[in-house]
Length: 325
Image (cartoon, rainbow, N blue to C red):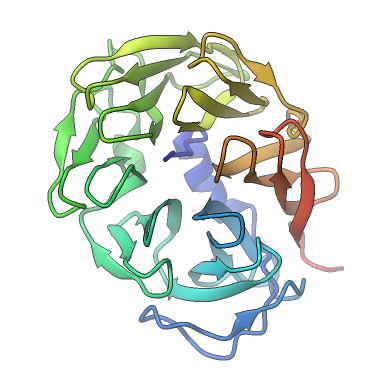
Protein backbone atom coordinates (compact mmCIF):
# COMPACT_ATOMS: atom_id res chain seq x y z
CA UNK A 1 0.00 0.00 0.00
CA UNK A 2 2.88 2.29 0.08
CA UNK A 3 5.59 3.37 -1.61
CA UNK A 4 8.06 4.27 -0.21
CA UNK A 5 10.50 5.35 -0.50
CA UNK A 6 12.07 8.23 -2.02
CA UNK A 7 14.79 9.43 0.07
CA UNK A 8 15.42 12.20 -1.90
CA UNK A 9 15.05 9.44 -4.45
CA UNK A 10 18.31 10.35 -6.10
CA UNK A 11 20.20 10.19 -2.83
CA UNK A 12 18.92 6.78 -1.89
CA UNK A 13 19.35 5.32 -5.36
CA UNK A 14 22.97 6.45 -5.35
CA UNK A 15 23.56 5.50 -1.72
CA UNK A 16 22.59 1.94 -2.51
CA UNK A 17 25.84 1.64 -4.36
CA UNK A 18 27.87 3.65 -1.87
CA UNK A 19 27.19 2.30 1.57
CA UNK A 20 28.39 -1.24 0.94
CA UNK A 21 26.55 -4.44 1.84
CA UNK A 22 25.90 -6.86 4.63
CA UNK A 23 23.77 -9.94 4.41
CA UNK A 24 25.82 -12.86 5.59
CA UNK A 25 24.88 -16.05 3.86
CA UNK A 26 26.09 -19.42 2.78
CA UNK A 27 25.18 -19.18 -0.89
CA UNK A 28 25.44 -22.54 -2.61
CA UNK A 29 24.26 -21.72 -6.13
CA UNK A 30 23.82 -18.90 -8.58
CA UNK A 31 20.31 -17.61 -9.06
CA UNK A 32 20.10 -15.49 -12.16
CA UNK A 33 16.92 -17.04 -13.45
CA UNK A 34 14.81 -16.43 -10.36
CA UNK A 35 14.99 -20.00 -9.00
CA UNK A 36 15.32 -20.40 -5.23
CA UNK A 37 18.62 -20.98 -3.51
CA UNK A 38 19.24 -22.55 -0.08
CA UNK A 39 18.44 -20.73 3.13
CA UNK A 40 20.44 -17.61 3.92
CA UNK A 41 21.34 -17.70 7.59
CA UNK A 42 21.68 -14.52 9.65
CA UNK A 43 25.45 -14.90 9.56
CA UNK A 44 27.53 -11.75 9.39
CA UNK A 45 30.28 -12.80 7.01
CA UNK A 46 29.80 -12.11 3.31
CA UNK A 47 26.78 -9.94 3.90
CA UNK A 48 24.45 -7.66 2.02
CA UNK A 49 23.55 -4.01 1.99
CA UNK A 50 19.77 -4.02 2.50
CA UNK A 51 17.81 -1.42 0.60
CA UNK A 52 14.06 -2.05 0.88
CA UNK A 53 11.55 -4.28 2.66
CA UNK A 54 7.92 -5.27 2.13
CA UNK A 55 5.75 -7.79 3.95
CA UNK A 56 2.52 -9.70 3.34
CA UNK A 57 2.01 -10.43 7.03
CA UNK A 58 3.93 -10.53 10.28
CA UNK A 59 5.97 -13.56 9.18
CA UNK A 60 6.36 -13.45 5.41
CA UNK A 61 8.21 -10.64 3.65
CA UNK A 62 10.84 -9.55 1.13
CA UNK A 63 14.10 -7.64 1.21
CA UNK A 64 16.24 -6.19 -1.58
CA UNK A 65 19.93 -5.39 -1.45
CA UNK A 66 23.40 -5.91 -2.88
CA UNK A 67 25.23 -9.11 -2.03
CA UNK A 68 28.81 -9.58 -0.87
CA UNK A 69 29.31 -6.23 0.78
CA UNK A 70 31.01 -4.75 2.63
CA UNK A 71 33.91 -7.07 1.70
CA UNK A 72 33.34 -7.41 -2.04
CA UNK A 73 30.05 -6.09 -3.44
CA UNK A 74 28.44 -8.20 -6.12
CA UNK A 75 25.03 -8.91 -7.61
CA UNK A 76 21.71 -7.50 -6.48
CA UNK A 77 19.25 -9.84 -4.83
CA UNK A 78 15.73 -10.29 -3.54
CA UNK A 79 15.38 -12.43 -0.43
CA UNK A 80 12.35 -13.98 1.26
CA UNK A 81 11.66 -14.51 4.97
CA UNK A 82 9.02 -16.76 6.48
CA UNK A 83 9.87 -16.17 10.13
CA UNK A 84 9.48 -12.43 10.53
CA UNK A 85 12.95 -11.45 9.31
CA UNK A 86 15.15 -13.74 11.39
CA UNK A 87 16.26 -15.79 8.37
CA UNK A 88 16.27 -14.97 4.67
CA UNK A 89 16.33 -17.10 1.53
CA UNK A 90 17.59 -15.68 -1.76
CA UNK A 91 14.92 -15.96 -4.46
CA UNK A 92 16.30 -13.69 -7.20
CA UNK A 93 19.74 -12.53 -8.32
CA UNK A 94 20.75 -10.14 -11.10
CA UNK A 95 23.25 -7.50 -12.14
CA UNK A 96 20.78 -4.57 -12.27
CA UNK A 97 20.26 -2.59 -9.09
CA UNK A 98 16.97 -3.55 -7.43
CA UNK A 99 15.12 -0.84 -5.56
CA UNK A 100 11.68 -0.61 -4.07
CA UNK A 101 9.15 -3.34 -3.32
CA UNK A 102 5.38 -3.59 -3.20
CA UNK A 103 3.31 -6.55 -2.02
CA UNK A 104 -0.35 -7.44 -2.42
CA UNK A 105 -2.01 -10.78 -1.56
CA UNK A 106 -0.25 -13.46 -3.60
CA UNK A 107 1.91 -11.06 -5.63
CA UNK A 108 4.87 -8.71 -5.37
CA UNK A 109 6.66 -6.10 -7.45
CA UNK A 110 10.26 -4.86 -7.45
CA UNK A 111 11.83 -1.99 -9.37
CA UNK A 112 15.05 -1.90 -11.36
CA UNK A 113 16.47 0.81 -13.60
CA UNK A 114 15.73 -1.30 -16.66
CA UNK A 115 12.26 -2.55 -15.77
CA UNK A 116 9.85 -3.89 -13.19
CA UNK A 117 10.02 -7.40 -11.77
CA UNK A 118 6.85 -9.26 -10.77
CA UNK A 119 6.22 -12.33 -8.65
CA UNK A 120 2.92 -14.20 -8.90
CA UNK A 121 3.69 -16.70 -6.11
CA UNK A 122 4.49 -14.54 -3.06
CA UNK A 123 8.13 -14.00 -3.96
CA UNK A 124 9.19 -17.53 -4.90
CA UNK A 125 9.91 -16.73 -8.57
CA UNK A 126 10.27 -13.49 -10.54
CA UNK A 127 9.81 -12.33 -14.13
CA UNK A 128 10.60 -9.10 -15.94
CA UNK A 129 7.51 -7.10 -16.84
CA UNK A 130 6.86 -3.54 -17.86
CA UNK A 131 9.17 -0.57 -18.46
CA UNK A 132 11.78 0.92 -16.16
CA UNK A 133 9.56 2.53 -13.56
CA UNK A 134 10.56 3.00 -9.93
CA UNK A 135 8.72 2.72 -6.67
CA UNK A 136 5.86 0.41 -7.64
CA UNK A 137 2.83 0.88 -5.40
CA UNK A 138 -0.05 -1.54 -5.89
CA UNK A 139 -3.47 -1.55 -4.22
CA UNK A 140 -4.59 -4.86 -5.75
CA UNK A 141 -3.72 -7.13 -8.69
CA UNK A 142 -4.91 -4.49 -11.18
CA UNK A 143 -4.39 -0.99 -9.81
CA UNK A 144 -0.89 0.39 -9.35
CA UNK A 145 1.27 3.51 -9.53
CA UNK A 146 4.96 4.04 -10.26
CA UNK A 147 7.49 6.84 -10.65
CA UNK A 148 10.17 7.39 -13.28
CA UNK A 149 13.26 5.27 -12.76
CA UNK A 150 16.12 7.27 -14.28
CA UNK A 151 18.16 9.67 -12.23
CA UNK A 152 18.50 11.98 -15.23
CA UNK A 153 14.74 12.55 -15.37
CA UNK A 154 14.15 12.64 -11.64
CA UNK A 155 14.39 16.41 -11.23
CA UNK A 156 12.56 17.34 -14.41
CA UNK A 157 9.54 19.38 -13.30
CA UNK A 158 7.50 17.38 -15.79
CA UNK A 159 8.52 14.16 -14.03
CA UNK A 160 5.31 12.14 -14.08
CA UNK A 161 3.50 9.55 -12.04
CA UNK A 162 2.30 6.54 -14.01
CA UNK A 163 -0.72 4.35 -13.31
CA UNK A 164 -1.91 0.95 -14.46
CA UNK A 165 -5.38 -0.60 -14.24
CA UNK A 166 -4.49 -3.96 -15.79
CA UNK A 167 -1.80 -5.29 -13.49
CA UNK A 168 1.11 -3.58 -15.22
CA UNK A 169 0.40 -4.61 -18.80
CA UNK A 170 -0.07 -0.97 -19.80
CA UNK A 171 0.80 2.29 -18.07
CA UNK A 172 -0.58 5.79 -18.48
CA UNK A 173 0.51 9.15 -17.20
CA UNK A 174 -1.37 10.22 -14.09
CA UNK A 175 -2.36 13.76 -13.26
CA UNK A 176 0.26 14.92 -10.75
CA UNK A 177 -0.17 17.55 -8.03
CA UNK A 178 3.55 18.35 -8.15
CA UNK A 179 5.17 20.88 -10.44
CA UNK A 180 4.86 24.60 -10.68
CA UNK A 181 8.50 24.68 -11.75
CA UNK A 182 9.57 23.70 -8.25
CA UNK A 183 8.63 20.24 -7.02
CA UNK A 184 8.58 16.69 -8.35
CA UNK A 185 6.97 13.48 -7.03
CA UNK A 186 9.23 12.07 -4.33
CA UNK A 187 7.21 9.26 -2.77
CA UNK A 188 3.86 7.58 -3.39
CA UNK A 189 1.45 5.36 -1.50
CA UNK A 190 -1.64 3.70 -2.94
CA UNK A 191 -4.27 2.56 -0.43
CA UNK A 192 -7.01 1.59 -2.89
CA UNK A 193 -7.68 2.04 -6.63
CA UNK A 194 -9.15 5.46 -5.83
CA UNK A 195 -7.26 6.59 -2.69
CA UNK A 196 -3.60 7.49 -2.82
CA UNK A 197 -0.95 9.87 -1.57
CA UNK A 198 1.94 11.72 -3.19
CA UNK A 199 4.80 13.54 -1.50
CA UNK A 200 6.07 16.39 -3.68
CA UNK A 201 9.60 17.63 -3.02
CA UNK A 202 12.07 20.25 -4.18
CA UNK A 203 15.78 19.72 -4.65
CA UNK A 204 17.35 19.64 -1.17
CA UNK A 205 20.05 21.87 0.20
CA UNK A 206 21.72 22.62 3.55
CA UNK A 207 19.47 20.12 5.32
CA UNK A 208 16.29 21.85 4.10
CA UNK A 209 13.68 20.87 1.54
CA UNK A 210 10.20 21.91 0.45
CA UNK A 211 7.89 18.92 1.00
CA UNK A 212 4.12 18.86 0.49
CA UNK A 213 1.80 15.88 0.89
CA UNK A 214 -1.28 15.49 -1.33
CA UNK A 215 -4.20 13.06 -1.26
CA UNK A 216 -6.56 11.86 -3.99
CA UNK A 217 -9.86 10.05 -3.53
CA UNK A 218 -10.71 9.68 -7.22
CA UNK A 219 -7.72 7.78 -8.59
CA UNK A 220 -5.57 10.84 -9.25
CA UNK A 221 -7.97 13.01 -11.22
CA UNK A 222 -8.00 15.63 -8.47
CA UNK A 223 -5.78 16.28 -5.45
CA UNK A 224 -6.04 18.05 -2.10
CA UNK A 225 -3.10 19.24 -0.02
CA UNK A 226 -3.02 17.49 3.35
CA UNK A 227 0.33 18.55 4.85
CA UNK A 228 3.13 21.03 4.28
CA UNK A 229 6.21 19.30 5.68
CA UNK A 230 8.75 21.83 4.41
CA UNK A 231 11.80 22.49 6.53
CA UNK A 232 14.49 20.22 7.90
CA UNK A 233 15.08 16.77 6.44
CA UNK A 234 14.78 15.25 2.98
CA UNK A 235 11.75 13.23 1.96
CA UNK A 236 12.66 9.54 1.95
CA UNK A 237 9.36 7.68 1.91
CA UNK A 238 5.74 7.45 2.96
CA UNK A 239 3.31 4.66 3.74
CA UNK A 240 -0.46 4.94 4.25
CA UNK A 241 -3.12 2.52 5.38
CA UNK A 242 -6.92 2.79 5.24
CA UNK A 243 -8.46 5.29 7.64
CA UNK A 244 -5.92 8.09 7.00
CA UNK A 245 -3.20 6.39 9.06
CA UNK A 246 0.23 7.13 7.62
CA UNK A 247 3.95 7.35 8.20
CA UNK A 248 6.54 9.70 6.65
CA UNK A 249 10.29 9.32 7.10
CA UNK A 250 13.06 11.75 6.23
CA UNK A 251 16.77 11.58 5.60
CA UNK A 252 18.41 13.91 8.14
CA UNK A 253 15.02 13.93 9.82
CA UNK A 254 12.65 11.69 11.74
CA UNK A 255 9.85 9.17 11.38
CA UNK A 256 6.42 10.67 11.98
CA UNK A 257 2.96 9.14 12.33
CA UNK A 258 -0.44 10.63 11.48
CA UNK A 259 -3.87 9.20 12.30
CA UNK A 260 -5.87 12.00 10.68
CA UNK A 261 -4.60 12.15 7.12
CA UNK A 262 -1.70 14.50 7.80
CA UNK A 263 -3.47 17.25 9.73
CA UNK A 264 -1.35 16.42 12.78
CA UNK A 265 1.85 14.41 13.18
CA UNK A 266 3.57 12.64 16.06
CA UNK A 267 7.31 12.00 15.95
CA UNK A 268 8.36 8.48 16.93
CA UNK A 269 11.45 7.38 18.85
CA UNK A 270 12.62 4.89 16.24
CA UNK A 271 14.74 7.37 14.27
CA UNK A 272 17.30 9.98 15.29
CA UNK A 273 18.53 12.37 12.57
CA UNK A 274 21.98 11.41 11.24
CA UNK A 275 22.32 8.81 14.00
CA UNK A 276 19.65 6.22 13.15
CA UNK A 277 18.31 6.96 9.67
CA UNK A 278 15.14 5.35 8.34
CA UNK A 279 15.85 3.43 5.15
CA UNK A 280 12.42 1.89 4.55
CA UNK A 281 9.19 0.95 6.30
CA UNK A 282 6.32 -1.48 5.74
CA UNK A 283 3.26 -1.84 7.99
CA UNK A 284 1.18 -5.03 7.96
CA UNK A 285 -1.45 -3.49 10.28
CA UNK A 286 -2.07 -0.17 11.99
CA UNK A 287 0.30 -1.21 14.78
CA UNK A 288 2.58 -3.97 13.48
CA UNK A 289 5.30 -3.33 10.93
CA UNK A 290 8.98 -3.43 10.03
CA UNK A 291 11.51 -0.63 9.70
CA UNK A 292 14.88 -0.80 7.97
CA UNK A 293 17.46 1.48 9.63
CA UNK A 294 21.02 2.60 9.08
CA UNK A 295 22.60 3.00 12.53
CA UNK A 296 25.64 5.25 12.15
CA UNK A 297 26.74 4.75 15.75
CA UNK A 298 26.61 0.97 15.93
CA UNK A 299 27.65 0.83 12.25
CA UNK A 300 24.89 -1.65 11.43
CA UNK A 301 21.97 -1.88 9.07
CA UNK A 302 19.09 -2.97 11.29
CA UNK A 303 15.72 -4.54 10.65
CA UNK A 304 13.47 -3.67 13.59
CA UNK A 305 9.86 -4.50 14.38
CA UNK A 306 7.17 -2.29 15.87
CA UNK A 307 3.95 -3.40 17.53
CA UNK A 308 2.74 0.09 18.45
CA UNK A 309 2.71 1.93 15.14
CA UNK A 310 6.37 2.89 15.21
CA UNK A 311 6.52 4.55 18.60
CA UNK A 312 8.97 1.88 19.79
CA UNK A 313 10.90 -0.94 18.08
CA UNK A 314 12.76 -4.15 18.82
CA UNK A 315 15.71 -5.55 16.88
CA UNK A 316 15.03 -8.45 14.51
CA UNK A 317 18.22 -8.70 12.44
CA UNK A 318 21.30 -6.64 11.60
CA UNK A 319 24.13 -6.54 9.07
CA UNK A 320 27.46 -4.67 9.38
CA UNK A 321 28.07 -1.51 7.39
CA UNK A 322 31.86 -1.77 7.50
CA UNK A 323 34.14 -4.67 6.47
CA UNK A 324 35.70 -6.68 9.33
CA UNK A 325 39.07 -5.48 10.57
